[in-house]
Image (cartoon, rainbow, N blue to C red; front, side, top):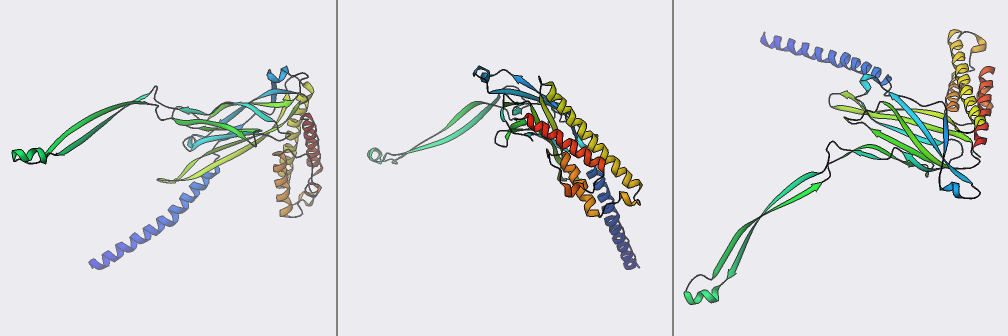
Length: 344
């Protein structure tokens, strides 16, 4: 009877363990998928950025051929409460999409942080022991004694040093793309929050004829997301923004920059309206795509076109799009050509 009871208990234990593995792992997978759907961080940058002319040594050259401009790019970021413990660094990269110009200076620069003010005093104690043996046989023979003399002793030394305290990397910055772009990497610390707004300042050397252009601001959040106790996996998310730039004293260049903002808004609105109509009237023949592959190609092209500085519209991709979307895309491409002309 006891053997039967033990066998029955073992069977119940195995069934319970199997049930936990099947349903417990399924619940864990669903929780992990739900967590993966939450963005690690959200970013935002201004719709346009003005370029401020700065006084420099280039102004002393007659006739002046180049000048220095400064871009101040505020980047905002916010996170949900559960993501603040996961994110460990933000990386921002600023590059030209039109003609590229050399970087003169940028802020913030690389910065280290320490929780200790001043120097750290360190004392090193060192103790040495010495022994000296002398052969005194010639002298000791006359006295009929041993011919070995041994002398021993101890020596204590104390060394005092002043060292800089250990520091953590708070901000790292530098140039990319052969000195025509910049990157900024911010690390989290107990005294420094990643979330919020920070200003990226970049100065460029441009020709006197420069009136505007386009930059791309790429934002990336990275961290380690916990899977189970003691185990975490890398997790990151990226956002990219195309930003028109204009010379602060040039009102016509500013108007073209705002025209680009309006053209992008109209294209996004036309594409969003078309997707809503297709979802509500999926049975209408005039709203159907020729095939699923064509639909995916069109959606992919819209996203790539909005994230790039493309000024040409491929007809093989857009011929299946509605007239409103094609018109908005052509208008935006024309505005981009005007912006690229400002960089000459």
